[in-house]
Length: 142
Image (cartoon, rainbow, N blue to C red):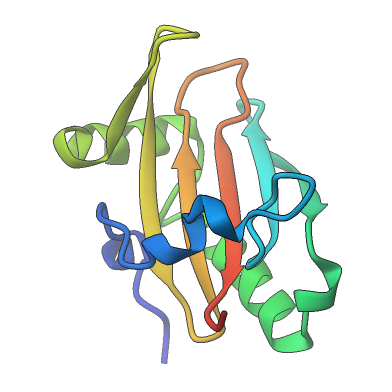
């Protein structure tokens, strides 16, 4: 049985705002439930990414597998195959997901996904010569 396209499962409203509470930040300014994030850019041919772990003690095999799976599903052919596919999806959700970046003059788009083991904040910047995708992963439990 094949999985449905992950884009059909993304939300424009965050149902887990508690992970962003300022009181939950650690001494380095990281959210206490943040496992880490993947930062990716598309060069016109393929996606390149860097993994930024945050609280390694929160990483389990199940969470690591789920983070990898969500990233793979986001960058699959039926999802964000490139930044143009990302831009098309973002434009369809502009009213609910866009946040104007006054510093850079473009819009950023925020989406949310609830996995089995993790909660995800997906930040999209569908413009060339930028980091285009940030996949932030948080634990479901506090």
